[in-house]
Each structure stands twice: as structure tokens, then as C-alpha cells.
Length: 142
Image 1 (tube, one colour):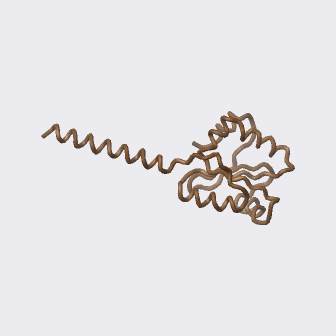
Image 2 (cartoon, rainbow, N blue to C red; image 1 turned 30 degrees about the vertical axis):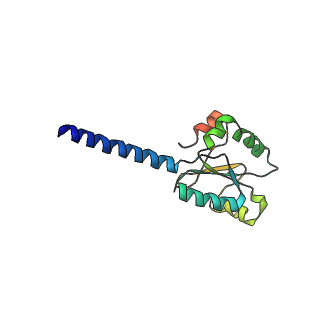
Image 3 (cartoon, helix red, strand yellow; image 1 turned 180 degrees about the vertical axis):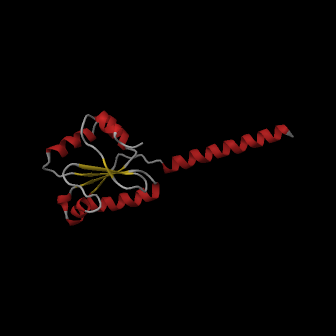
């Protein structure tokens, strides 16, 4: 009788462990894709709600030298591989009124480049864009 109980408890423990692992894998996000501008932001928000993944929102303009430097840093291997776990949106406020409204409204950004991280269901937090790739990655939430 005791042997059956041990096997039964072990079976339940294994089933629970598999269910937890499957749940985590189902909600894991991994992509190198960037959504673009206001329309992309809408898609990213929908995807964040469905997948419960963190979202990164990057405001940039073409003429900004600091934005171009950040573009290069975002392409560094260690940064790219870390950002693959985020739903990513790149917005140029000069592309239209909807993009400008996002920049001035919910994000309240004042200057370029501006980078925000939305934890799942959380309030966006501005992230420092200064320093080398290792320092930038260290400022990102897990």
C-alpha cells in the first residue's frame, strides 16, 4: 500500500512540474521583430495582453545622432539576444499625429532617444540608454 502511495505522489508531482513548465513555455516570448509606429504599437499592446510578455517602446527620429548611436547598440549581439524576450516597438513621432500623441501622451517623453519598458500589465518605465551594451542590458528588467 505504501509503495502505491509513493508512486501516486510521485506521479502527481511529475504532472504538476510538467504543467508548470508547459505553462511557462506557452507564455515565453522570443522574437527579433520590431513593430513600427502607432499601428505597430497597437499590435504590440494586443500581443502583450495575450502573451503576458514585457514590451520595449523606443522613440527615435532620423536626424538624431544619439538615436543612430542607440540603433547601433541595439544591434550588438548581447543586446539583441536579451531584447528577443521583449515585444519591441520603434516609433518615430515625426511620422504622424498618432505617433506624436504617443510620444507626448502616455509616455510623456521629452527628448530623443527615449526608451521605455512595460512589464506585463505594469506602468512604463524609462530606461537609460547610456553606456556600453553590457551596462544597458544590466538596466533591463528580468
